[in-house]
Image: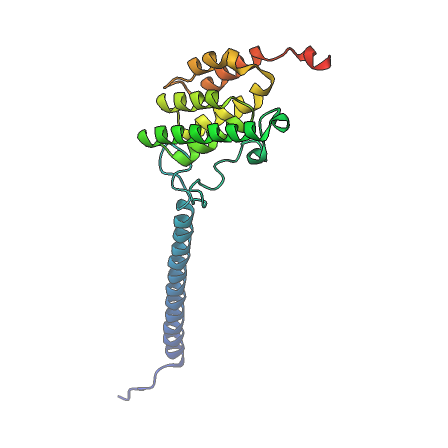
Length: 217
């Protein structure tokens, strides 16, 4: 009996193609898996980069990249544009001595609220921005100081305290603020929801402002 030891043509091609295709598919799968891990790593790195700029507590802004004066970039966004170059009404009519006296008062008030912020573990740089903003918008320095200190005492978060300052700075220009100051301070209370707090203060300022027809006189 004679046995033909040569592989049949079909068998050789089948094994060759099967092994070849199998190895090629495995290599392709391996490459795909490697690419997938690389893509996932890239996505994780991007997520980490995003997380670096996110605040990590109730006072928004902490954990953000800080500017040279220590205040997180963008934190003062929302304050009236160009406020740092503003001065209270009637500034041009003041004498040099009066202007210097006003600046001295502002510096003393800033020192006072910053000390209050430190004692209460608040961001003193943010608090300094708020009292300077209110003062330059025309609120009496001592009144601005009272608003800031009340906010700190009532544990109003920095971001909400900023919102109150923006509202007062914008609306109080048409109001004799000293007449409504106590009512405003009474509404700054711990535990009151931000939206409700803002509505109450806004109502006080609106009610104290001139009626709409006054603007047409």
